[in-house]
Image (cartoon, rainbow, N blue to C red; front, top):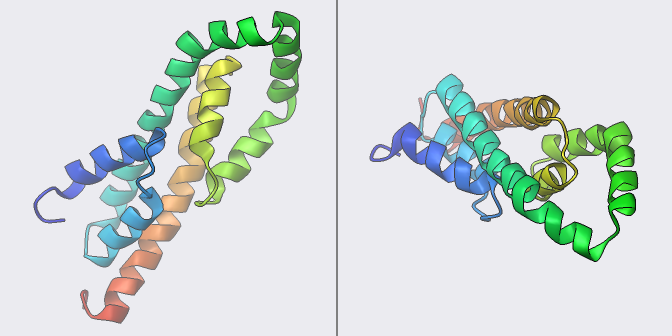
Amino acid sequence: MDKYGLLGVFAATILAGTLVPLGSPALVVAAAALGMHKISLVLVATIGFTLGMLINYALAYRLGRPYVIRKVSAERLEETTMLWNKWGWILYTIFGLIPVLPVELLSLLCGLLKTRLDVFLALSFTPRLIVFAVLAYFGEHVGIWIGVLA
């Protein structure tokens, strides 16, 4: 942690926000357990993870849609989009609040279905901010319990 610090957390969480399986929840717990400043850790991890999911969103938005339209009719994609716009935010929020669920995959779906960018960013940032805050708090107590922190 001393060598890479917050920059390392930022880079790792950007990758974790994409489809690279890095385990950002474990990273946040470990960083907090080793004494990294919790508020900075939570903000940097949340911003990094959100940027990673934005990469997924942008790739699916630009590259995925033409491919899917060739495989499925444009009408079917539009029906799915309408359903997602009505109910998808609930699923996306639930996935964002439970660390083990693959919210990164849903960011691809959001891009594919052209979810409004402001909604996507709010639903990507807010649940992860909550999750990372809880995990950092937990990590700090793990650090105290194992004797790394006083």
